[in-house]
Image 1 (cartoon, rainbow, N blue to C red):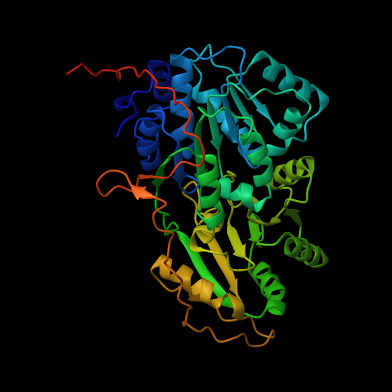
Image 2: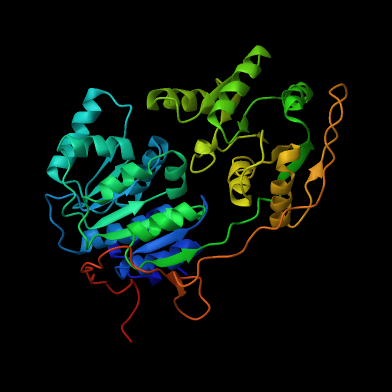
Length: 434
């Protein structure tokens, strides 16, 4: 389906034409009409599916078309990290190129005083769109710099990352300041139970739109070492001795493990750096700058960089531990083999992670090649294919299907309905009335 077949306004369509965007992705095709119709939306889609445009385009179109207050913050977009906030801000500049009357400001930590004053000025003047990280926005709210009482749109992006990083309490404090009739949109790459609970609390009778997780690109060469934990660093040393160790990301699910791995690699004289939530924003910016610039060969990271960060030339991804589920596995190894490049994904599987890795293989529809351990480090555990059964039970009666055979689903409201704004939609370009 083409963008011009929607009710996005002409200024948005002109910007999309200039950017050579014609065909919508599945998440855009299903989200844009629902948002234009004023519905709350719960979107489940992995990074790279075009979800930023799925919520940004209809919101910008409505802000440009309708009479929203000029002295108010009309839209809040929450992002878990400064890097993602910057990417959303860049998309805003492109999509909003012809929107002379729609303003925006990005609000995130780690800035100098001049930046803070720019944020403050934008909020006081009533920027239409405010793109922010939770901590920074909450700080502005606490000191009275921000009034959300007339906000018309609230977007929570990467909700599962917000949960992992401990931001949910901050989010709920912000949500309490929103009016009941604020249209709310929430996106998450995964849907664990706590995210479901958050959706019930945050959204008003939303439409749920789920796009299935894609399998990894075929050009990613996937393999695994079945090993004990003490053998993992020896395997890394062996891998790096075999070839070029530049442009490598090593993922671990725990920040303490990331710190431990980084210390060990530095003792091995490997040019590496670490990325996790204990770093300040300025430290994280410096780490990413050095890695993107090629000044660092190996980045050891938690899943904070598994999603949403665009680094096109990663050659090897190493899963130091098995991700919690297939979706996280896809996100991690999806950092390699981008922009028509080949890539390698290696996973270390210890005896405790075998069941989890078997579930990943089941999702992939194939068995991942098991590489023999290097000589001299001993034998690893035997890889068994017996996996624990995973429960498919779900809470019943909380979601119901909308439409005939669709994945769009409605949820019970998590609070007062409020009075939703009904938006006037313009006829699409080049389409005559019937």
